[in-house]
Length: 500
Ligand SMILES: Cc1cc2nc3c(=O)[nH]c(=O)nc-3n(C[C@H](O)[C@H](O)[C@H](O)COP(=O)(O)OP(=O)(O)OC[C@H]3O[C@@H](n4cnc5c(N)ncnc54)[C@H](O)[C@@H]3O)c2cc1C
Image 1 (tube, rainbow, N blue to C red):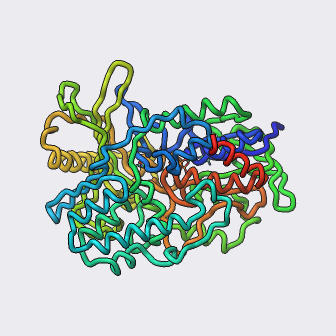
Image 2 (cartoon, rainbow, N blue to C red):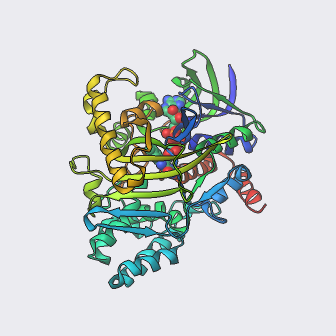
Image 3 (cartoon, rainbow, N blue to C red):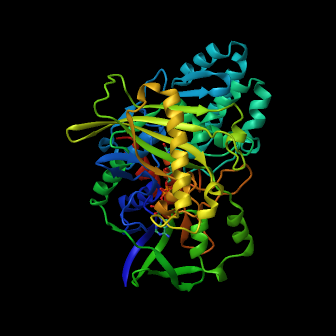
């Protein structure tokens, strides 16, 4: 039987981070991935030789001293990653159709405050108070900083009040409230359900800066793969655990793989959806309360996506990476409600991709969607879905293309649809239970699944554990890494690498 110190399940950004933290600390690691390739949501796919991103388009935290900058430094991969910062003046644009108005949101907190005060001169004190509160929550959150992540997770008062309650106290201006909650698109939870604290933790780094990465998630995957070679980290694709064996004193001794092989490991960290973890855990070792807790987790939103490319002869010298979010109206709660029947919120991401000697200008469109939209085909599989599903997809693609041309009329007859994906596509591609974009919904007063599981040497990390997005997913692995490694060794690892 092959023996490892640690087994990591799932090779999305959480699993890659977990494996590298453990490997860099001298441990023999086995990384298991159900798909035939690694990367999970951050992996890119190619159609007609053009690269498209599945689930990683932009991030905050890449500016010097930002969280992601520090994480990549500690993992010794920062030199392999080249950020493309979006235009500072209009990193994010929001078009609120009911207001007939586009709002350009720069980055840098002072810049955003000044811009918002231009848009809403009556609301200057609400704007100052909002950004002051966001900053304070993040300053008081140990898990927002690698230097303090080893302090216990301390909840703030703002963990017990919703974003909506805070905004209602600050202002009655609907457009301002919509803009202050608009980054809900990056975590997929209604303002009336998320705590103000978690909203703040998700947003702060995106207020400081917004960047894409050259070669998208592939750059991250390649950087991790390169680093793995310096350590004792073995990757096995198309492989998953089917059974636990040799359980003594609530400790799993060995793991049976779908290949029939049995391997042993001191610890096993699951970086997959909590409901997928629940499927694997042996029922005789888990309580009804534990099962109920996991079963009660709801899903974040998902997206219907359309991937397009501009004709190569289309001349547009100032085409650059940018994000435009289109909100039909200001009611963000309704936009994030599965029962909502109106026009969905839509995010358009422009990108310039260089592949060898060719340059492609792409626009990816992400329209909010839910498993309820595709319920009638939920038992079908990719490649085998019925005609009615194809018609649903075609209808949605046509609608989205119409909406794109409405905001970018210059692209009429110049934009080719290369591919499209429903939440079922995401579900099957990412081996998730429902195709939600961000794992479980981060609802206020919910206790997420992070760290030790009911069997002593099993752990949970991943986007559903702490916060979604690549930063939240990676931070969850640092928190679990700290538990598995000797505390002093962990501190030394962080500070040695951060000081270089
Ligand atoms: C459409 C979309 C757009 C997004 N845009 C952004 C963005 O711009 N910026 C951002 O920061 N975040 C974005 N996100 C969110 C971000 O992609 C995720 O929060 C993050 O990548 C999740 O990483 P993870 O490792 O926790 O999970 P995943 O990436 O889902 O990885 C889990 C891996 O585990 C594997 N797996 C599942 N079950 C098993 C099993 N039993 N055994 C072995 N392997 C298994 C899966 O195949 C998968 O590879 C987006 C997500 C989506 C869907």
